[in-house]
Image 1 (spheres, rainbow, N blue to C red):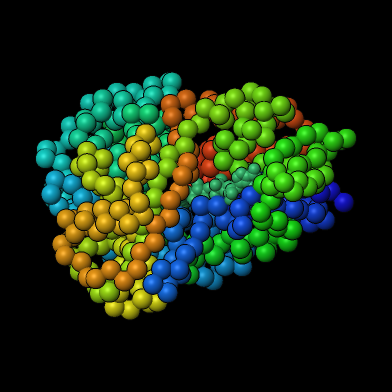
Image 2 (cartoon, rainbow, N blue to C red):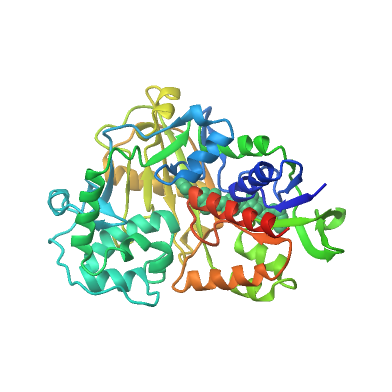
Length: 449
Ligand SMILES: Cc1cc2nc3c(=O)[nH]c(=O)nc-3n(C[C@H](O)[C@H](O)[C@H](O)COP(=O)(O)OP(=O)(O)OC[C@H]3O[C@@H](n4cnc5c(N)ncnc54)[C@H](O)[C@@H]3O)c2cc1C
């Protein structure tokens, strides 16, 4: 029987395990996870007696892969969507202002933008064709629609996803929808909006699982039928006959596992270490992918907060401690139902290259969150409980040239029979993109086995 070892029990590794089960039902699948739990960036925690997400809290529903994974894991009937009629905002120029429709931050409705007051002056378009080579998001956007659109719309939207800086972020990898609007970004965004109006209802943009995204990993693991070993860091991966030998475990208690095929679904640095001898070019390219750190402070307040929608983003130019806040009990009906009369919310802090977080205790993260929230939305009800989840080196930075780097990784790995890689380091960090990447890796692996 073919044995497939999956290294890393985040959503990429688990989606890969389930894909193997679907395509090769007779294979034995073993998932090896370094920590004591599967899920990686999907994680839950009890705060004030409520179980809530402290990592990823939603997935794009306009791409099929995340939602399909939930169905395949038996959670299809438990998919939920954000509350209708409540929107997000941008905290800028002294107020939380409604976020007008945009394409990755490029305004698509100039009237709504003007009414929001996010920009002091209406943006002006300077059409220019998209460059053949990759450039930074900042360079592309400022040249065509000005610094203010970059600072107050594009940066906060991308910063929320990547914890990155637009001066470094790759246009092609991090903002392909913006690239596609060229040459005239404002006209292109307006046309894109017009097209979505003409389409039959595409359904909600985001989805979650009732009870939280943190339920998904366990369900996927169970559906995969894989043997899941936690507390099993893979330290080494070497050729053994036609297959592989993996060295697992803490240094004082090493174990070995032999496998025919291997999927490495770990973050860039760990993958780079494992591939150093096997695929040096890939290891080298992956070592170049920097990761951003952030923290999520989850807060439960003893009372309602009026006059704020599902939350807000904060442009870096505002200089606040928090970069975003999600009012989970406004956004998700399932959260509101489990916390009547309370407000459940979270703030996020941390941008790549900013080490402020390192110097703050968890208590200070909460204090700064509360201070910023009060400045944004006014006095808050008393704090019942708080939890700070630090996500060190968690978000891969898709710097200029990222896709060329990924091509190098994929070519180099393709030369090694019986080995594949997948995860957030490659072609998208959102859950559906990561799942798609895992599926593609398994499809290649089994096709050549
Ligand atoms: C705070 C935060 C909020 C986010 N919010 C959203 C959101 O709302 N929606 C969305 O779509 N995306 C969101 N994302 C992004 C998304 O969650 C991640 O990109 C995705 O979950 C990454 O999955 P992964 O499996 O590639 O990596 P990971 O989740 O990092 O999993 C990798 C796993 O490999 C394990 N590992 C590492 N080294 C080894 C080793 N040597 N041996 C064995 N195991 C190892 C790790 O312990 C980990 O469990 C968020 C990310 C963060 C950090």
